[in-house]
Length: 127
Image: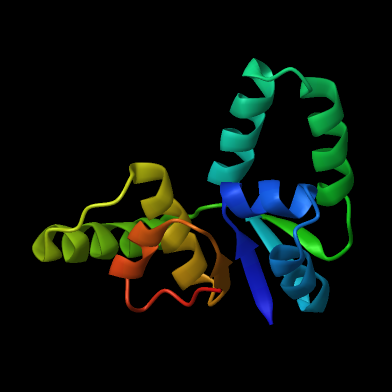
């Protein structure tokens, strides 16, 4: 199984919560969408433990099982289709989460996230 982490689930992983640690440990590969990386670093900048959090994140990113997930032109097609679908449904979600969903669908991953608004995307595999 290949999983992608949303920002809140990376935080849960860093805290050692078993409901995230266990599936991450079982995963063949773990992906961190670039949007999540940006959200994490933005939070670190305004937090009291910036250096500690950055060190932990760097160690995570250097793991051989972890990959940074970057967009390409194909991602924009997934983004546009999801945007239109959610608009038709009357269930828009935050822009950053729309990019995360597009990347997860594009790369056939399972998303680890707590945000309920991802439930509006039926084709998005989640844990």
